[in-house]
Image (cartoon, rainbow, N blue to C red; front, side):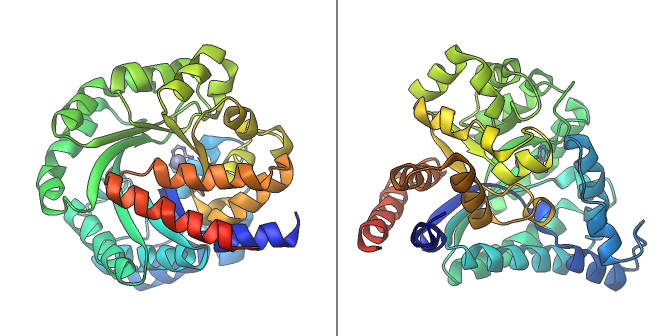
Length: 342
Ligand code: ADE
Ligand code: ZN
């Protein structure tokens, strides 16, 4: 890529809307926390752990991702993990992040949900002072039952009130195939009744039918990944018309073998058809890069133009769950930067 464009992308103000905070745990921090907390890992060294990051599909990644999260026990651990992400994001000029967390991964190990949210919140509040605003989205693990998701939702109710400035929505993640959105219709209805924002991973490994279910049954505001929507032209037209954004994660898709080569990624086709796509990092510690690395990889592989990059950046801001006034201010900030930059 031309170095001027790379530099312009690197320093552009941007929002990140698809980042699992547990997926930002770098191997070094996993080992540090394991030692601090006396947790035994199945890997002898940082290098051995990193060597295991050779994924063949989503499940092969999730198995290691949940093992990595097992070192998180105390409020300070969640604070340290989140602070490390905030630092990486600020370095990439992320001015606003909407961050997923997986409470069930922690509560099933006996870590109270209050501990998880308190640590993340303290780091995000510090991040605000350093220039990055943020929201938090509670994700249900779809490989578990809907009863488990309902119980998780009920125990999170006080947190939705206490952290109303931050904890603004629910999402759906983990093993997609065989766990369609329809399995979670009731818990999403409860979240909708409470006025929460709704998102779901769909069309990452799963078929376009799962994206339809996310829209029609869960009534999501955004779809996470959604890259397989391209297989259904009527679905693509609907996403474009309804301005339902897809939070695309290029390096994740490559590492999890959703595409065998970045040049085959469908982001540009979706963009050409008017779908509001943008670029995100998903699980940056596992997939080889934070948000700017994702921009560089996709812009390079698909030979995106400067105007297309601007659209991606603008989509990231416009698809965020902030007030219209905040959104307008973020877009004005991007415009001022983009037109002043070389
Ligand atoms: N949890 C963390 N990353 C995920 C992904 N890419 N898909 C589904 N669940 C996830
Ligand atoms: Zn994800």
